[in-house]
Image (tube, rainbow over all chains, first blue to last red):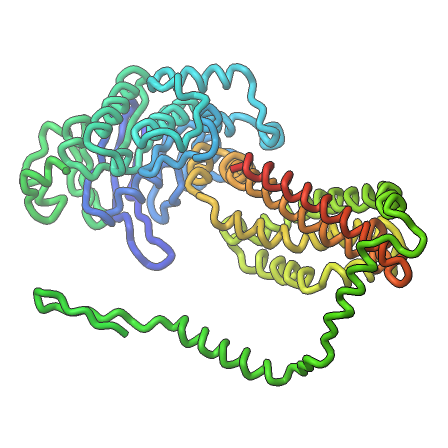
Length: 254
Length: 269
């Protein structure tokens, strides 16, 4: 369980990205965070694995207060949280297989990983993750030979290889075409359902957020202005989040 | 400055490119300084050039063509030591450059107090010409291949550290972020996100620098740093034909090294 208690974040340049955030996200939820660009979606997401440290309040993951942890404890926390990025963040000139294996790096001491050797179980796990994502046959292709949708699946396989409890996705489909977008979102839904992994995703497209997530968190100027089931959201609430009502085509994203 | 006016009536002005001012100033400087260079056409003696070329590329005195080319086969040992000191110097110098280049890369060590002193040190090494490095090395360890090796190692270190840190700075850091978010240490993130991107470039540079070093080490022998350059030095006053034969050999060896270098670097793309 993830619990935000009065969380605030002020960047060194004085920008207040989060203010008084109180949230509780249970295990196995599929949460979409929506809001305008710059509203604080990314900061909220990245505070969970401490890629951005919070400056006020408390943040608990499974009853561990994470704002004070560092070093090995922090790495252990991060190991249990997969992360998906808008631009996939793969090493393009490395094979798909080796990219997925990097999800296992944090399970071994630094000196052991320097030579690029992994135990057989790790290799099997990496290949099984690729199989789960339906791209096992691409395992020994170079990552830069894949399409955008395939790259995001490799990134998901890398996250799965971590054996995570939570997957954070920062605009996971923002650089994909509409058809690939649906396929990748289906993958998230499947992972959420089959592995009971908590998914928290920042989304541009309101329609996708409503379709896939079971819970919506709306953010405006660093504050949570909506938090509830995706089935309850209506036009009025979207006005609250986005500052004005969305036209039909805006809700549909494209 | 060009002004574009569109059919709609709106207009936009392309700003003046300052590069033209810099190029203009440079041109004026070059023309001005060229007046100070003493250039006396009367000193050029083309007929002498023909004489020297003839001395270099025909057997001297009673020697036959057999002697001329036979001499090439006695050069095996200095040739091998030239190649050896080039190769060893390239590899040692390149490996020494790796940690320094990492320290000099702004995207890895964000503190000015790390990368600025390192860069200053790198610039310092690069101000010294390879020939001077060799002269100093000869002073310390004496005439022979070891001083050539030291000169080439330092020369390689200078080029490689500079080129490598610039490559590290252009690396895609997004996988580094992904590795850190998965709980990897910074060292692990470097090993799996940055290293795979720079290693092929590193090898390619290493081969190219080896090519430069073979050419350079042929000359380094001239100041006593061993290898084939010493053969040229020993013969240049009295045996032009031997210098000529050595030059022909060097021509083919360097050509072969260049072919090999191009081939290997092509494979690394």
